[in-house]
Figure 1 (cartoon, one colour):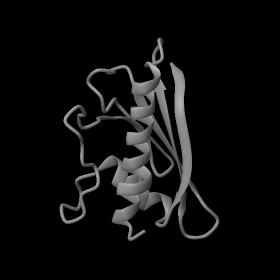
Figure 2 (cartoon, rainbow, N blue to C red):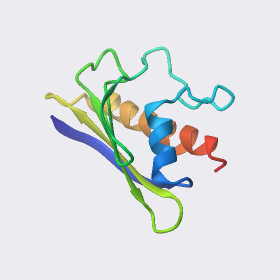
Figure 3 (tube, one colour):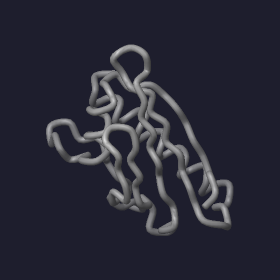
Figure 4 (cartoon, rainbow, N blue to C red):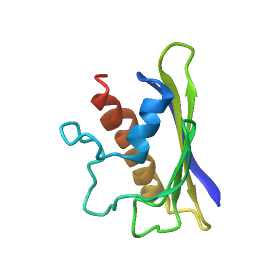
Length: 119
């Protein structure tokens, strides 16, 4: 597997809360955040170690080999440093598709998920 993209950003709640959101994205139907596009599918949890690691299966049927790893760590306050890393098998997606996959992960995690925490 090749690392195809990664981004780290803080999230307001502590790691245990972010872990719960990543492992159970539909837990609060009044605050949905995993709003998928037509070319996406709900990921499966491939591996999880509470509260610091979550591994998702692919969101994209056209790249079933893709995996998304989330590393969670305390940020020194009461929040979380959340890093997502996109892994894919060779060959890497062409640049437009790769850009789309990275952008979608960033939107889902650093915009949509973050918004559910009031940020």
